[in-house]
Each structure stands twice: as structure tokens, then as C-alpha cells.
Image (cartoon, rainbow, N blue to C red):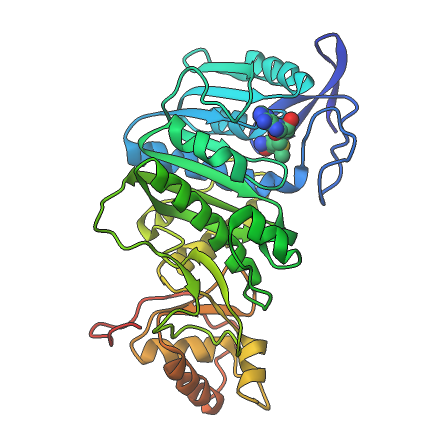
Length: 401
Ligand SMILES: C[S@@+](CC[C@H](N)C(=O)[O-])C[C@H]1O[C@@H](n2cnc3c(N)ncnc32)[C@H](O)[C@@H]1O
């Protein structure tokens, strides 16, 4: 139960807890829905994103560890401020937090929350500002873009507001556009053709990465993904921006390109341009640790475990058991564990994906995947509860596709 009897600028407010952080919300903000934000809330707060913010806390902790110092953060579309506030309260990794929003009521909420909660050694400021403009206080180590719908209009400003080696965290919730239901809008907004098959959500993520990559290149920066995911009707990525080297080939391409040997896209299917490079930095992901009081401890633990496995397999697109079964006219579906075991015994990397419970990634080319599935069909079923996580190919593996 949230505690009542609080005020924000003279209006009744309640004290709410998410993870290890207490914060104020106007009393009229509905908070019970786990599905999404309330339509007419006085300030935006979506409890369904608590898991994403659990992961955000882990990322900020890890980033400050990797950078070797606490971070200077700009939370550009902050609403209640919960994302930045959680990083501030639940990690020792924040040196300063600038939280901005255009909505006057949100700025009052932000001010109250920062005044109430920011530790005295952290510079925490709430300001009414337009996220289209670089704010005073730049450059930052981390800029967070968590807009309604598309982040596209804010990306260039975020790039300009970051110091070299800084990280942009970008969320997109316009999945109808990115994942193919509104093809023309995707072309207009991102200059990309979305995929309309089972891979549409991964393609959506890769269209956003391509958008950031192109925008960063305009300011002489290249993109290095630390962590990228699709989950609960949104995509989100943490991308380090380094100096662009002229000799780097761009991983932004249309699919299928010449030499493409990933999951069959079916005759005539074309998509992109999209990011075809890695989605994660395996070392970065490996070092992520859950915060001490996550809002969704069990979901976070299993998600982190799956992310760690997946990050070790750099492969464009995942396979999905049902799709592959239909394609190969299988009469029965071999267990996923057997397919992964065959691939690894063949010297390839293979791991389950976070994007689909019956999906997996491998660096094996499609003809080899097909052979492994055929062998998996004849393999004795694995014992109940057999582990399927490990991704490493045995020493002396064949060269990947
Ligand atoms: C999806 S909400 C942010 C959610 C928040 N990060 C969280 O974790 O709860 C988007 C916010 O962006 C604000 N906004 C929209 N356009 C803006 C702009 N141009 N500049 C600054 N804020 C803006 C809205 O008022 C809204 O509060």
C-alpha cells in the first residue's frame, strides 16, 4: 500500500516504492496496472516497466565500474524521474543527474523527488527543458531517451550531448511501425522496410540501432552496442559512442545481403536497412549483477541469465522451433536441448534467445543448422531438467559463417 499524506506543490501525493526506491506521485496517478500506464495520469508512470528499470540499475552500476568513476547522467524525458532516481538511490555509480521534462506538472514531481531523495554528494537537478536541445551541463556519460513512441527526433541531440565513449540508452515503443504493421510509416520515420515474419521484433530492434548508428555517424561517432533487447512491446538499447574510424565497414545493411546464411527469410522477403552487427558486448553483459532490491527479482534473474548466454553468440536473427519445423516438414519437433547439443558438438556456438521461448541463436550457417536438426531428430531425448544454457563451442571449432 502506498503511504498517503504527502504533497507535491500543494497537491496531494502518495509515496510509492519500486525496487529499492521510494518516490512521490500525484495521488491521482493510478499505479496498480501491470499492463501499462494510465491514459489520463497527471504524470506518466508505468509499473509494467519496473523490470526494465531493474535492468537499468544493473547497467548503471556496471557502466560506472567499467568507466572507473560515477556517471554524469541526463534523463532527458524523465516524467516522474523514477528511472534516474532508481539509478541514483540503488547504485553508488551516479555523480550527477539532470532530469528534464517539458510537462510542467512532471517537473514539479521531479523536483519533489530529487529534493526528497538525492544523496547530498550527488548533484541532482530537475529542469523544464525540451529534449530536442542540448542542456547546460553537457557533456554527459549517459543520456537516457525514454519517449512516448519513437526516439528518432531526440537521437541527434543525445549524440551531441555525450562525451566520447559515452552511452546513449534508447527506448522505442512504436512497435506497430517498427515491426511491420505500418510499413509506410516505418519507411517515412526510419527510412527502413520492416520485416513481417516471425523475426519482425528483432528487425525492429535492429532498425532502431541502424537509426542511432546513422545519426551518430553524422557527428563522427560509431556505435558499439553494450546491451540491446526487445521485451514487453518495446525495444531498448545501451550503445556506446566511439570515434568513427573511416576504414570501418558499416554494419547497416538490407537483408538478405549477398552471402547471408542465417535463418531463411522466405522467398522474396526483404528488410532494412538494419543493424547487422552484434547486439551485445558479451564482457559487459557478463558483469551485470542484479540490484540488491529488484522490483521483479525472479524475472530479472532469469532474464540476466538468458542475456548472458545469448550475448556470447553473435548471430544475425534467431531460429524458432515451430518455424524451422514447418520449413523442414518435420513430423515431430526435436527438443531444443538436442538441437543446441548437436550444434555445439559440431563446433558451433549456440544459445537460447531472450526474444522467444522456443528460439535460439547460432553462428552455424543454415545448411549446417538443418543437418544438426536432422541429427537431433534421431538423438535420444535429454533427461528431464537437462541444462541447455552453455554456449561455448569446444576447442578447435569450425570457423563460423
Ligand atoms: C514515456 S514518458 C517517460 C517515462 C520515464 N522515463 C519513466 O521511466 O517513467 C515520456 C515523457 O517525455 C516527456 N516529453 C515529451 N516530449 C518532450 C520533449 N520534447 N522534451 C522533454 N520531455 C518531453 C513527456 O512529458 C513524458 O513525461
